[in-house]
Length: 112
Ligand code: FES
Image 1: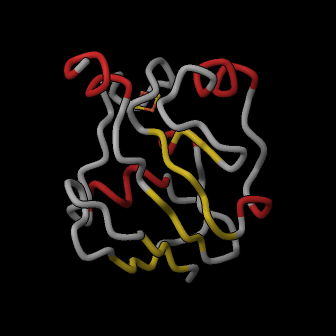
Image 2 (image 1 turned 45 degrees about the vertical axis):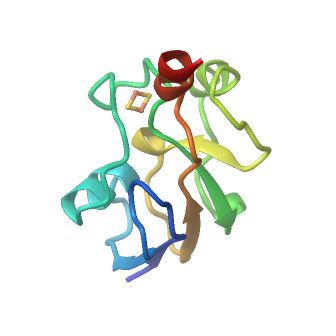
Image 3 (image 1 turned 90 degrees about the vertical axis):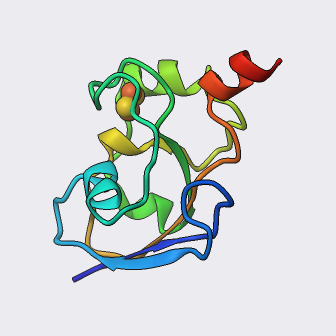
């Protein structure tokens, strides 16, 4: 099974984590089931950006994002070329290295 390697994130996953996930599994569901509390303000329906992650390894192994996802990603805090909305990512055949950005758009608007 492919491994999902989460890089350490102070708030969501302090020491990082390595999780095995079946091909086709939904990335955020696997994360949440394993105690990595990625925000999902729209309940994983591709209508917010709080589940934003950056795929640091094997981004190109994933199915491409939809136009709806891309439009939303434009609003995400800390957007990078390898950004995805984790509720829209299905695990492929390859291991992934995943970074959870420091902030979500919700936190940015609350704090600034
Ligand atoms: S949880 Fe809202 S877009 Fe993913």
